[in-house]
Figure (cartoon, one colour):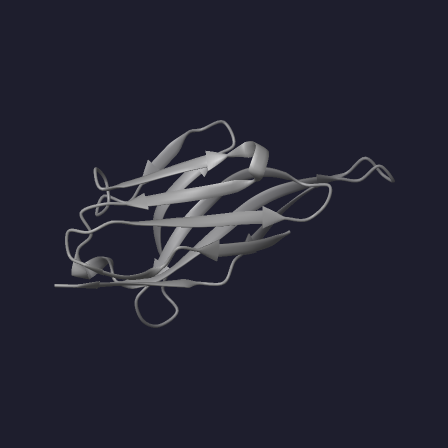
Length: 124
């Protein structure tokens, strides 16, 4: 599975951005998708998470401002970011947890894939 993220950019504080992340490949089923962000170093903060069934959860720092949604038919997840603050400035990464079934031996494999980051810059 390959992930293609888009929608990052620069915005003034209080503004909005919408990130998208599309998963592509063959013979897979998305289990869940997550947005992480990183400001510096290897540490990455979970921002928002959505399962294929539509259950969501958010970091406390973005609750009420960010909304994650998904389009199962398009294998795409969106992150609507409103009331952006300077502390939201980061590189945002999408992650997909996906399963694949083997007709050969009947096994089910769960894999996690990371997309490339997209920069979000919020200026005050």
